[in-house]
Amino acid sequence: MDKYVLNAKEAASFLSISVSTLYRLTGEKQLNKVILSKNRVGWTKKELIRFTTIAS
Image (cartoon, rainbow, N blue to C red; front, top):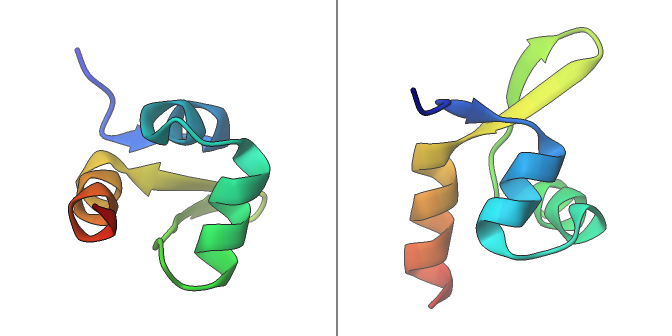
């Protein structure tokens, strides 16, 4: 079963970028994160696919 929300390492791998670039893009509001708990965030596959379509 595919995961709907990916952690930083998985999301970076999905986009073929580094984790630091993922966080930079998120900080620049180019990617939206999902807050999972006080210390955890994730990125939805839908959001990552949206980013790839507007970035290309």
